Image 1 (tube, rainbow, N blue to C red):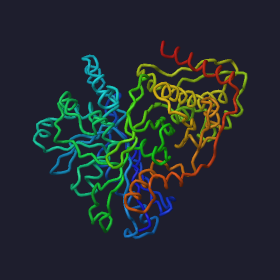
Image 2 (tube, helix red, strand yellow):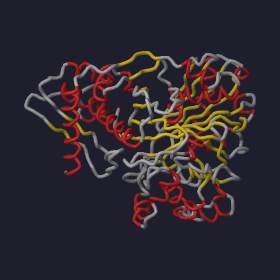
Image 3 (spheres, rainbow, N blue to C red):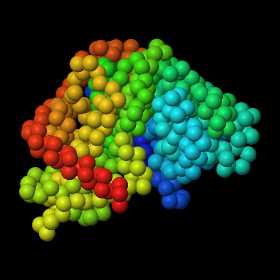
Image 4 (cartoon, helix red, strand yellow):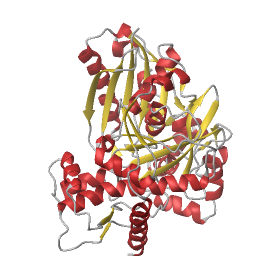
Length: 495
């Protein structure tokens, strides 16, 4: 058995990637699916789209690679986190569309809980803030709004899951209702210290415990696929939420190691070791991964707009036709201008958590043009990353830790953006040979459990750097530019 199949179920598309025995990508299949916006701030997925695109891409990648399914040793799954699916245990039919992690409809629920004084208890148990971002309030909303939903749940007739749970249930023909610790810890229902569902939070939200899945390690026996799907049963042996899977794929296994993934937004995770760190800077404490019942924790910071700022230049301002044009424009920008862009199009994420803030541009002159906008857009990603790193290091500092930042995601392909990132954080930035780190993390979990891939130390030795960016900016310039950014953010929040 030479291959491991990684399922990467994302917010806008599903992908299936085959990795060979050396963890090299053999083939990729991808299908996009529709997003549904039934009201302002609401984001939903048709649950059937999640399943059909996963099934189709799995079959497609096997056909594309021209292999026999007998050559597939195991399946690993990584997924969009916090998205909620509730389905009928007997029929398998969802009782509502999936409510996506971006959805803000439950803001009133979380505000009421916060004003009632529950946030300290929730944060102490889950490491999370009371925010619509997480699964619990979405689940409560579905049970409140769907006729008979809570009664059916109490009777044991409904199941809840994040996307991984639903996919496993479908893949196994309803034999496995399970999740892993990294997905469970994002629901705002899981006690990350005790390693179990929190009965007190479930009671607070009136969520029946009967509908919650069993929680496993990231590398575990999650079940086997129905034989009619791929011609034979294939074990599912690795699961991790997308950002934790990227952390694993980047081999950030030692306390103090830090990764940042640049997609539409940006997610940075700092490995903090055996103990969860209670953030004083509105970062999240989360489980980075769990093996043999023992969790390793991380601090996480989220930036809402990273690669999306380049999309805004293209689709909103029409300054570019392709994202690749951003770098040459930035290289030609006038060095005497100091244009600062705060891309708070949907509010500011960590460490500000200001949902009401909106975007702003400062420092414009008569000569400001596409070049200066392009540079300001790419610089904004570096500034926001520094905000996260400074907050993380204020909360927790690894003794003698390596300050190197490992990066992945689409924007990490920009040499200019990564060089500025290194300059503004004053530390080395490492870009890996394989940018498919999220899928690789899921594949390694499954392949390691199946005996195809080496253990953690062996996998860490396999990690390869494509390029390292090192700081080339003097301290005075770095301080001046970052101070301008801080003043711009403060001003934007006052508008």
